[in-house]
Length: 364
Image (tube, rainbow, N blue to C red; front, side):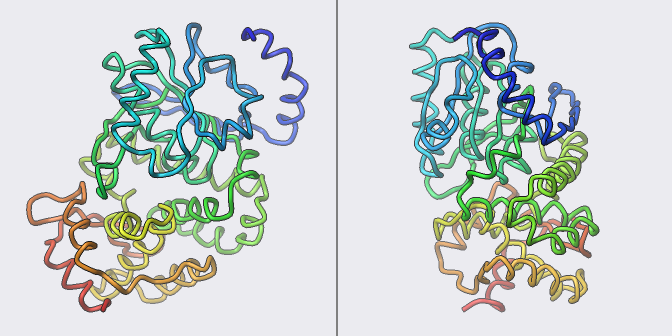
């Protein structure tokens, strides 16, 4: 099917989708390039953002099964859904497939999927032919509020999270809110972890909005979700525009991640769930240090408990080894994020031994 035929065949369906949701655009400008984030846009309108030339689509088998009829014309490469695909061997295989299909430096890579697909597609785009253009259609809540935006790409090496990667900004990210309706419940809850994180570090009012509208969020009210995704992305883009390669303020986006990544990799649980558990631990440490009012900690803890996120109290040797492999580690120190209040965060260089001492006080 040619591009103009694709547009004609979908124009009526797209018009109805547009009636239900008005797209909001964030223009993202950094020295490394420009990016457009379209919140509330439809997958059916992706042709507006694609350049002329050959298109190569990277997706997983779940998304392909659900939405292939809405894909733009292009060569499709399918990966297995889930964290197990985030390996350098999958990246290499995709690069070989691109070469076999005749992709060149003028080709465009479109990732259609959640965080795993976006991480992989972005890394492939940064490496193939030393870099080709790319964009995303983000299909999960976690990806829409975090993984697809900001130019971080990465895969895992063994049990170490995202420690092989690059910074490469996508030309566009489409956040089609209606696609969240097909997201499994566990993955949706995982996405809420990154949404709560954004509010916790930068927007107190948004935090309480999430708390007060949780019933509508869980029911996947499109209007509520679109508003919260947009607010979360405004926070992230404002931070990333000033610190693309994470040498300063961008580290704030890692609240809950130092301990959360270790929890995720050790227990093989969804990323956002582990981040919420990491946030509770980091906030608890903040209370013990006198940084965070206990009342704010209790609000954060109550919100995660309402999502049935259990606390983590066990930190075996393997957990400590994963903390030592954290990307934010510098010598004997780690750039750690503390809350000073809901909506306010700070970065502090803390000794690794101090982290382990804290864990020994709260764990068993």
